[in-house]
Image (cartoon, rainbow, N blue to C red; front, side, top):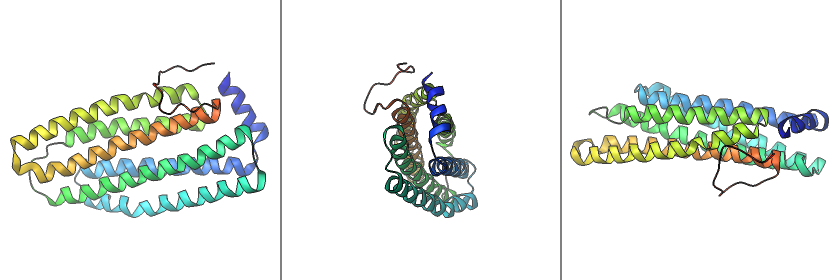
Length: 234
């Protein structure tokens, strides 16, 4: 019932300005998600042109963050919101920061894609990038979907996906370090792959932050630094 009650509240109480920043946040989320997908693809397919496109688009994400932040400040100044309204504005402000950081990580991945395209050597590590990239993209998409519906249960399920991403990251790290030790000629190339999977792991952390903020705005609970389970209190 928490989700339904909250959605009814939004329809009846929130004004157009509040709905607009929510819509703009979702647009930014879609932009960042596409940027990340293209960055991962640019590594996996050794596509420098796509990587350069990701780097150029990062400026648009930065502009979206600034615009939404300014809109949040103006709403607080004009409306002096309280309770749920204020929590939503705080959440949007934090969420745009996480989305902008994801955009930064996508740009880093694209930069490494360009370097990898110029290097010779075996394609070790690409399987790990594809696997971890698929998991991270799925988590980000689920987090944005949970936000669109203010769905606490979906947010809790999604933030728990970060545990598997962390495990997969550590496994890939061990395998790639072992490979470098066995074949020192691969070190330069594999180090770039390591930076890519590190960026992917950080994206998972930011997606987790988005889910925690959903719980905060709907339930009024700050669940950061807690051990998460896939259920929540009714």
